[in-house]
Image (cartoon, rainbow, N blue to C red; front, side):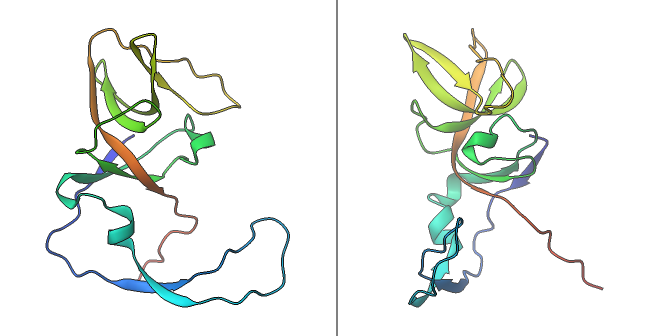
Length: 148
């Protein structure tokens, strides 16, 4: 991870966006389905505790099988207690990482999730600080166009 994007601004204007409540197949096309147009509040959906939430941008491909790719924006909740199975943002021996937390035989392990590249399991000896649990991530497929 190479940048801390920041905490959500409080107070801010919450905005609801159109949300078409239909399942859209990512495989083969299907006939048009009935849908209900609702709205979605991304703050309500993605931020569980605003006072303890921060955003970081991930770099690298070690978590690609979890859907976290280079450039993903991670939504991190510092108030959520990390448990085995959570994806966490941690500092290990002075280096920041995003990994899957596992407890094995009473020891903490940090696992990558990339079936194409064999990343080593990180087993911290002493210097491990967990900053928060990744609750969501955002992948931008197209960057916002510049204006002006």
